[in-house]
Length: 349
Image 1 (cartoon, helix red, strand yellow):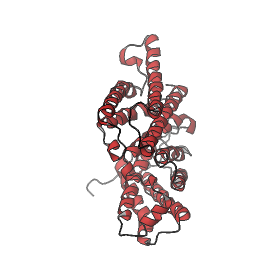
Image 2 (tube, helix red, strand yellow):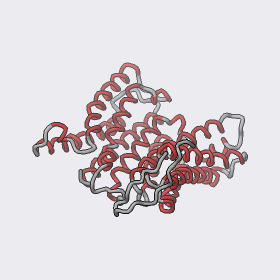
Image 3 (cartoon, rainbow, N blue to C red):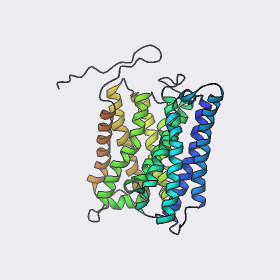
């Protein structure tokens, strides 16, 4: 598909994703909800209608041009196409669930079977631009930011869906003052919860970036865009009452982009890929602690926690890097010259 088509798909996916954010905000902040038919659901399901209608239109255009069967489905659009009726079915199931059993307003909303079906099918729909770009001949190994933008938007909003359904372990929903308090006092369980949330959120944020960095040499600004979109969901859930924490993650995205310029991580530069995974995590969560301290009342009083938590995140990032790229791919560059490849690993070691 053309860049224009993928960009429209991504932007309609933004409508879809923002509709979900509005609905998540309502569930978190409007405890009086008692019906399925709300303005928040209207924003959500209208986004679904828009993006699914666009996908169906692309298939219809190809069919009218003479392509038959699966040949009418654009490359990368098949999973999204199949997810459209699945989402509609789970939407109907969700309406019946709410009608018969009521509206969830607590952690139970994250475990509702109809909601899990909705988010799974929604993931497939909004990541359509990513699958379209994955093997597109005009993208190449060194894409421009503009050409990669639809894929970045789709994957970033997919990240927000994962963070939504892991809200009980989302470090981005903490206020700065509460971060400082949790890492200052060890007897209220806050330190345990925050340390766990940092580890989990680190994986949710970093894994999509490593997926892209393994496939492409990411242009500058890619991670900043992804992290800026990723903080919208926890911001909506907290009524944007923790802006400094959200900004710290965006700053972490900028630090990751600078590391990409320096290290040039890619599938054929394994050690650079590993270093990027570890150092970007270390930078992101050091900024998280720093922004919390600057706006939440000063550094926490337990130095082992506020110094060690970013290091643990960095080590987790390093492990993720090794899991995503255990061996260098040795793939030639678009210019026809192979980048230096790490020396082969002795499997007996």
